[in-house]
Length: 527
Ligand SMILES: [Zn+2]
Image 1 (cartoon, helix red, strand yellow):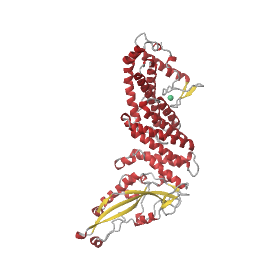
Image 2 (cartoon, helix red, strand yellow; image 1 turned 180 degrees about the horizontal axis):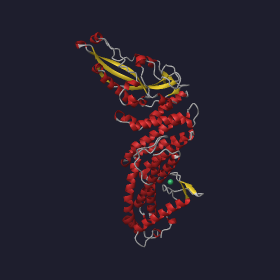
Image 3 (cartoon, helix red, strand yellow; image 1 turned 180 degrees about the vertical axis):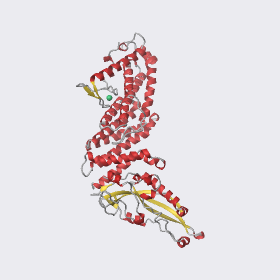
């Protein structure tokens, strides 16, 4: 008979909910450090008995009648080796193949999420208890693995199964908002890394789990408003994830994980930017400091979910949160006078961000033999908060959120056109005027609305604007020859009288944008 004490890895109590080893219990109850389940000791003990029964059954099925695992260390190594080859090896290989497939599938997804967000695209998870049971079964016959090849495959398969079990715990934690989730995730990832330690084939995964553990630890500290430990953990996460990325890019088997690791690296940077922005809260970093960031991340998640058509690529970009949070950090630094951003020469209590888009075009003017092309570079200001305007996003009215230079143009007279004296078919003069007075300054004493669009989003909107303008104005379409807009800058325009209900529209006469997005949301997002 096999005794429980002979089974190295199942002698300790196991969590009845996830199967992970439990810390030495002191009272009647014990909380799992991996999934958070609080359970009675008697239940954990009953669960352990159940595992032992299943392990015993496995051994009975795998070994010839009359031989028990306790005796296997005393029998001849050649006989043990043959037993491994004929019985254990093939059984293990089949089940291991399945775990390997499921692990790689899970790890081809991003295993991290910023506060207030969940990972919604993870594959439906298996039961981590099954993976721990697989490990216990293989461990119970480990004395049969005599040669290096058997030992290596035993180590690889049990190591990966255990890492998978911990990763499954985290997949569940990533799919729901729970207060203590980052603390549990840090523990699961650390133990997943530990289970792969020394396995050359999986060193990329070991590094990835180490990095993810640090990222989760940093986020745990961040949510507790602890700046220094959080900053240190993000700092430690990056080299581990970068090492993992480097190893993965050289390994054909692991290449399916490359995009996921890139996103994890980006989320680590995003977390660090968010931390710096939070730490610079003019009111001091408290639980209340999270409110605008909760709103900001909520908006970004919503955009990602709604992304379709034109917006498919940019709103789903893996580094979108990073880019937006970096701009929020820059805005906060300018607010704290620790840095400067480009600020327009207007006055007001609220700084609203605008993208500066250059629209170079050439058009034909003149008639018959006097026809010639004129080259113009027009500047357009485009509200960096435009995703909060429905008409801009659904393509119905992209012109509402920018300085509509094509519709505001003064129509040249017939004589000017025939004579070829037109110098432009747009009228952006006042925008150029505003930009001339724009320069690097802090945003001291102002509320700041952070940009919620990226450079790439702005480009998509600018292209959409040009297309709609051409469609709506056949004469423009006829004359306009070339146009590939370029997003060249981000400027903050101080606006408004006193919040709330402030008019946040730059005073540019007929060129003034009609909308910078839903004012309620602008207030909620402002830093
Ligand atoms: Zn558990």
